[in-house]
Amino acid sequence: MRIMNVEDQKTSKKKLWQYPWDYKESFIISAGLLLTGYLLQITTRSSIKAVSSPVNYIIGVLFIIMLLLLHFTSRTHPWVKWLRSVPASVSAITLVLIQAVIMGTLPQQNFVEGVKPDLFGFSFVLTSWPFIIAQLYFLTTLGLATLNRMTPWQWKNWGFILNHLGLFIAMTAGILGSGDLQRYTMKLYENQLVWGAENEKGVMLLMSIAFELKSFDMETFAPKLAFADIKNNSIETKGINALRMIEKGDHYDYKGHTIKIIDYIENSKFTGNGYFHVNEDGAAPSALIEVKSATIDTTAWISCGSFATSYSYLQLNDKEAIVMLQPEAKKYSSHVNVYVKDGKNDKTVIEVNKPYKVDGWKVYQLSYDEKYGKWSKLSVIELVRDPWLPIVYSGIFMMIIGAVYLIFKGRRAVV
Image (cartoon, rainbow, N blue to C red):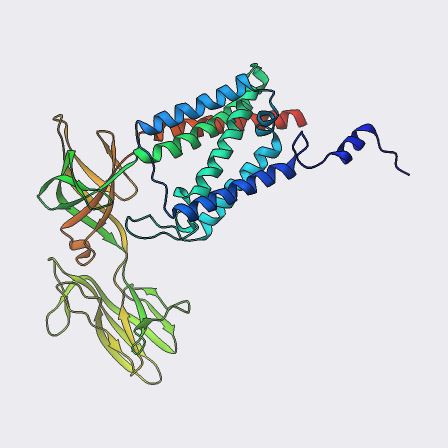
């Protein structure tokens, strides 16, 4: 027969909501916060608009002051002790994870003025009440736990403090800084100086920098051959050779047909007797293919066409045809002249995933006129400014340093 000690007796007699609170109470509170968030969302039926400066600075300062007051004036209060406890932290993390799972599982869309959002805010998690409440709960537990390790200061805790403080800084700056994020697009046409940019609502704004497009360049992959279903107007995608990139001299089998690429011209136009190489706007890829099977033996030119060149395909029967798909972009870029109001001018190439930095802005290559493809005279660039990003990066850097130290300390303790 097991004899219960004093601690076991205390634990067995502990009732719900009897201090100290444990995981049961913590998860009940987090569930209540989640329910409150969805009730607010259902009641307001709108997304929460991000606040910009100076309001976000005021909110940030007030939140930090609140944490400091709770820590230094009510450190021993049961509520404060619970908020910095492990059960509260675990329940807060769970609340955040629930929102992350919803955001990662369901399609997200930007809230457009005049369009009613879904009832629970599942399609715009980042600006919904449940997300904001979850973040506030998590940052409160994180901030108080960090302050508890910071005072009184002990050097053995510096890794924990750096890791947790870095996370606090990164998340707080990311949330508060969203309102100061500026994102505009510019439509550049060749040899035209453009000072105006559009925001996400289509409003034109005068910028402090201007761009002049000198040329738009695009590199493409070779186009692919495919079998098309004429009746359903669809492309066959099943099978290893269903979508095969065109290469002169290549031959392969697909669906009982032997296909050979006799000739391939990257830039061509149709002249009546076939396709011939040209070097002018609107030239399109073309290929001379040979197709043999039990029912057909023929050779023909096919092309994906362009705005200036006719499209052609090889019909095999009343159900199928061999077509050439439009070539996919490999890389595209804009050669531009840059003019800044302070007199600093520059020439640069703006490429995809290689932003150009000027006057506090990051400039990205965004798109082009898809109708004209590599012959496009239009280039669309995006200008982005996020003044809070250095603070977020600083927090992430602190997190990494603290995590590395904690891992190293843990391994050394094991050894």
